[in-house]
Length: 305
Image (cartoon, rainbow, N blue to C red):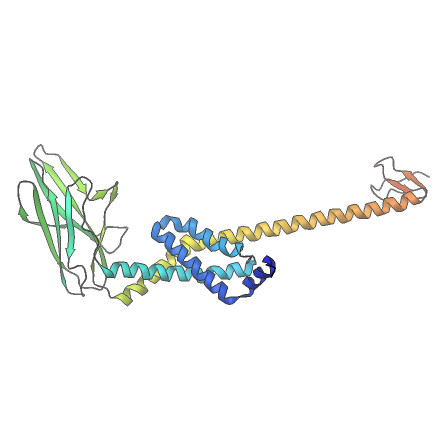
């Protein structure tokens, strides 16, 4: 049986099931890009969302406009479910830094209910002739640690390290983020702030978590829907707009070329007709005109009788 690509493309274009499968495929490719690196979504996500349907022959602008809606919403929901599962399933590794100043930074318990007590602990590497003041930094925002710092209490030490704790109660249903900082004071009067950093970036951990799964999922859906619209939606619809504009420009260019071809054909027909008659050459433009004509049919030059 002869394989015909054109017939296959028609089947793909008309099949609703295939379109749904493609939407799901694009959603999971976008989620994979998000998990790999959030910054890939505006690039890889836009290319996946736009490129795959176009490669399959779905180039209709109305279809592309509609195609982006379920992809954006679906990507936001799946990413929100992934993040919810990530936060709910377990505690991240203990906090530590490249310099070895901080180690075993954690909160216990990791999950609880509103009103429960939580204990933050961290181990600090000591230096000779110094006095350390250790702080817990908490926030309800992963990117803005703007809550007041809480001074931690030393509960154990030896010649090399000291351990600190801070107890607190979380009254509301929420997700906390935390890190630690040390104000290291030297005997000569100088001081320096030390933060938990790795690779030049401040390290932050999740905890404690007092929010239930469903509440967290719906909260994340709202956050990631806005996030996906900004990172994926803006780029995608900008690309669709450019695709529409270039398509229209191509159509206009082709229409102009057809008009020019038609004009050349008309001029050719007129020249043939004039050549069959007794004609003269226009002194202005060189066109062949009827001997009895009062003016040139091409440039409008009037002839003297």
